[in-house]
Length: 520
Image 1 (tube, helix red, strand yellow):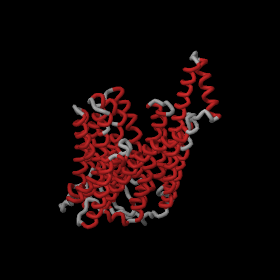
Image 2 (cartoon, rainbow, N blue to C red):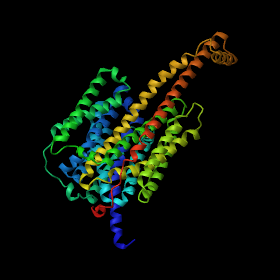
Image 3 (cartoon, rainbow, N blue to C red):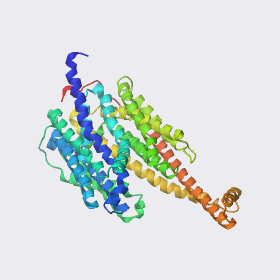
């Protein structure tokens, strides 16, 4: 390497560290509260349904802000808006930590979501501008480490802090990192000319419709299964409000001069196709990593620590796969890598669909590692192909849309699998119950063996018979639940493989037209 290249190389990595620090803590905060929910509920004297609003409120405000990021960056100036977002996220983390009631915590979580929502899109757009186009794969490997690592480390970190300190510290740990991030952003981030602050007419209707539409949608996805979906008037009304608001928003944004979200970006075929692939990729990822610990803890008797040990190696596999994919994406056709990642991710959930009540630790952990490898090889070429044809001036807007669809894919995936588990468990329970009759030979043998086992423990024949029947019914419920998990994993696998044809529609931009390497 020539001596003159060293300063630019150092500056790229400093910028990467500067934008990834706040992004990582923001992503961790989307999941860190989940494991501390019981402690928070007990400390603040709240009910179970009430306490879940500490999660929902953050997700709602986060979802609303993400697509506005490009527009807000143009109005305020990107550097100024980035620093403001980190400061708001850090200060609201402090407020969350000192919350004196559930209501105050929900309000402060909304503020935290508003501050954190912009960090992912801004980080991604700055990375793509800072690294030359030929190094976009490596830039996205850096970004992907935070995106993939956050949901894995969040629950583990939250559980450890809650058990050893208190739930307040899951918010307080953000403060020193936030302060360092503000200082680094002030020193090392510089706005390019097209991202300087500019005055423009505010699209009030777009702002209102976006907030109402996405806010309602996120509440529907988060609370739908709990409220039995559309049999509940509240969920039905919110769903109708969401659909109408989003449709009106799409119309308004297509006719105003300065839209909050520039939908013309979807005219780029690779971007629109890549955004759809990303939606279903995170649909699969979040659906599976939500199902896996539930299966382990409810059916297999794993502790939270053991369930975390199953998830952990998959995250490590992703971290190892991403740098490899980042290097390969510049040496071979990115579509081949992307297709490989889609197939591997689909195969992993297919393996999970064959889990049973007798599965050992190795049988469970291997599909999770396979999924980690698949997601590592999927994320890098997908982001590179999706963003390759986007102008630097439009990168903020495109990154905001891309991150919104990624997060929505995760939310839809979680809502889908939780609903599938509940519905299919009822279905299989009904079918299996039909066989629990005195006329079924297998049932006769099982009930006789169960009663005999109870009698050997010293029970009288009548009590032993009743206890044996209860044991058989309990096993039936476990089998019905296991079959529902198999169904959900199988459908995730099918959805994933169905997006493979979309890969062939994507095109990489010709040449390296970026001069962003020395921009900052």
